Length: 411
Image (cartoon, rainbow, N blue to C red; front, side, top):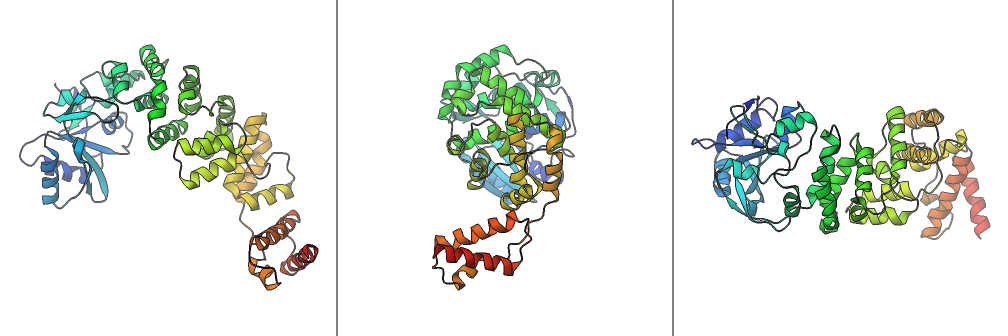
């Protein structure tokens, strides 16, 4: 396998820390190369998020060399030949060249090898099979450069075989098509993805979450999600997430008035109410913070619309905070065809909003003899709503008087 061109490997990929790692691996003449997505991104002039390195050295020798040079090493996937080196705070995933002996989904049985072409055959797409030597020699065993330039996402070898090895490649196909695709998708690849979509429920939530959120963050998310619906992918993936027209409307608003949170884009696909949102949060293993935000956006405690009065807007901002308020306003506008011009003023108000401290605390109710418990929160919350409905004008004395009145009513 001969190099196809030269490309600066160091200035683009983490600079001096990368050089130190490579020098450690290549000390006695062995070759090490950058591989995969970091090379692909370097070709198109994008800074790599993660830097992966491959070497013929077995993993125990990789760890020995790195440690001898004072680098921290973590055996992140030692069974499959992968360790992570940390140099000056920058992580580098280093994997020994390998070939598949048996493939059974995510957990293939592998053997280590010194054959770079054999290792490249394990990659999912042609432009992810690129590799780059320390001297800047760029290797392209499957014409990934031409596919990248043409905006084609092409599987290495047989698409069905690649997907059977790991069904996550169905989702990776659509994510990469959103990012790099310039025309209609490859018919054979799409057919292979559709045929194997039934296997998507076998994937862990964590792996699905990473792909879905990265796809939804893409500028072409609407187009690609619609394609996934048409080809029967979504019913096996997130059967609740079908309102692509609402996502499209939200996308148009974002272009005109500013971006919403990624959870808002996910919420746009869902029906109203918290059932679907909770099911999606469970399937994707969202963090508690992500889950709570998604549920709040799908089932808000109060309506946020362009028709609210200024006092009502300010009360909603105080209760929800400007970010949730913004996303709810945009989601409502997207679902009801509200022109962007009608939400410009409330969005500007949200951008400038600063929380106003409420004059009372729970201790004020306790000091007035209210027993500790949920009644304290309910009473203070009611007074806060009363204060907000008066545009936050009542001072502490007025709020205390209102609290006394409500305690009297309760009694």
